[in-house]
View 1 (cartoon, rainbow, N blue to C red):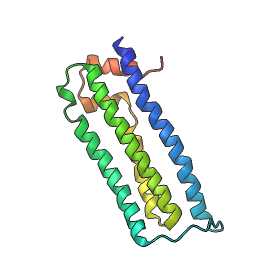
View 2: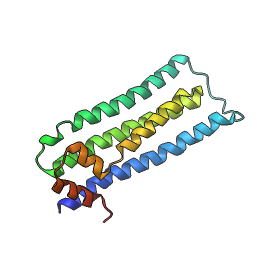
View 3: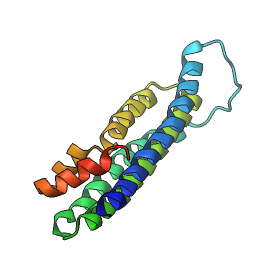
View 4: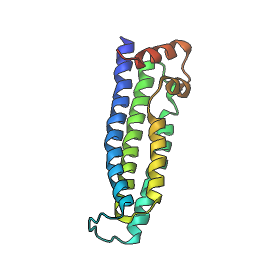
Length: 162
């Protein structure tokens, strides 16, 4: 019973991450191709440079925020007694992290579209690294939560396809 509940929580994070990444990548890819082609003209309005700085700053803010919020929310996870409670905290923190990363991807795409500044490509690449780190894996979960061997085996079993 415990394995099924954990499997459901584990899969919810994994599926949400893949869906949001699957939406963000093509969107940014389309903007990136537009950026590199040079011969397409969408006649976009010229926005002030303060908007460009604001978008880049907001992108960096979301990257820092997702990292710090995730760490803060999972910091006391070892004090929780039951494994399901620990996984619920991890799931909630991970979903919030994934949503902030998706917002960062969208800001990067908008920034590149309107300003054609390569800083938005760099920010997107950094965001992809964090997306990779946000993907749940049994080893990451076990190491982060400092689980016992028995709890680690339950996590490994829950992460396998049913």
